[in-house]
Image 1 (cartoon, rainbow, N blue to C red):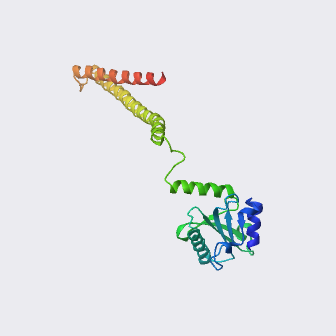
Image 2: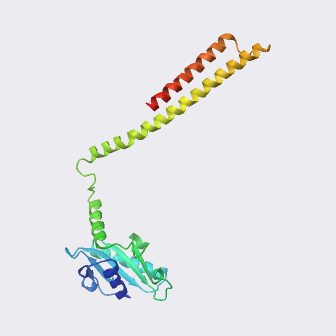
Image 3: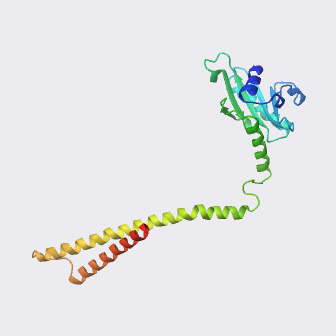
Length: 231
């Protein structure tokens, strides 16, 4: 089984031979908790990942391997080391059933991977550097003039959004005023028509004048707002 994983690391994942330590007894005591492979940076010999290989085990067997991988990380005393478990089942009907990849996290948690998402050497190197940066509380993106940068980004990103939202609310209010003005004019016209037809109008003349004046004001405000948007 280990040979299958070794060939995968070499041929599919593209690891150089110098980065795959198969004799892990050089670092770990021989036993059930010993990983099949230790991945290191071939230039610095920095440990990057431990790989456990298991057979067609059930869920409890997978979690036992995951806890072993986390224990390996504690032995190495490096939080930047990643843990992986590879399950081999030669009786599987498909390639995905025959070989399954998992990444381990704290408390022995398992996260499924695929052959295409299994990290290569450069990914492990970047992950190691990122973990060190986060552990040191230094962000490579915001270091230096972090306050100034974040403030300028917020002002550039948020100001147009705020202005757009304000413009939308203003246009909504303007359109509401337009239709209110139209309604006032219709009421005034209906009152005049009712009076002409011999009926009794419900508005006095002074009220009709106020209605028409307010309607003209609402409609004029809407036209002014629309003209400013177009310009």
